[in-house]
Image 1 (cartoon, rainbow, N blue to C red):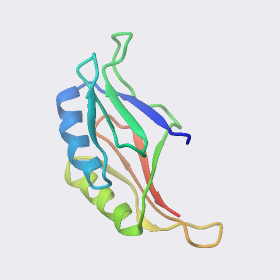
Image 2 (image 1 turned 60 degrees about the horizontal axis):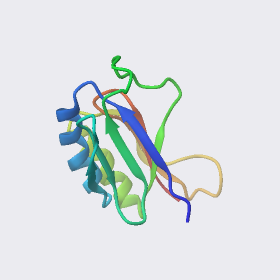
Image 3 (image 1 turned 180 degrees about the vertical axis):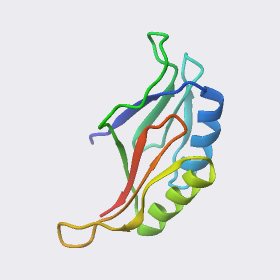
Length: 125
């Protein structure tokens, strides 16, 4: 099994943890470990790991231009739920849930940015 791990820096770890605790719960991920920077690592036994941390170099966290993390969801309903929860918790819309062009038409996705501006895709294929 190959797993994907992602890491985002945050300038407000407390707010980031409140955001991700609620948003990621919609797709079955939870905090599994506290990080030494005060951040938190999220995941489950079979899914991805997402670490929210203070940057190691002590500089301000910034969202990577052109960078994006994606969560592969079990259903279109999960895509809709995580997008709605992210916006409810202060995230910004980057693409409402819906079918995406290309392929056989089975791709359903939504995009949002977290509180620090990191871009996230929720996708069901």
